[in-house]
Image (cartoon, rainbow, N blue to C red; front, side):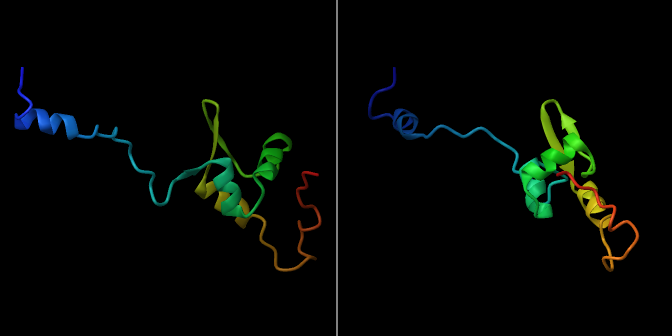
Length: 98
């Protein structure tokens, strides 16, 4: 048994437990949650949920129960909705989820 004056016992008593190593999230993630995708597109997460049910929204992926969106799919979906003016073909036939 180590004595109270032992340097080992003093170190053991004051040493803080080490936190588990958790990988840091990448600065530019490839996949976003519904909340993150909504913020990225400046849409409500609820709007994205409606699009998943009714169609017309960006492609999404399911990893188990988790729904994620690839950033490249969000950009492609947003770019497919670019118009020059309100009389552009396709503008009147927009996808509505209401």
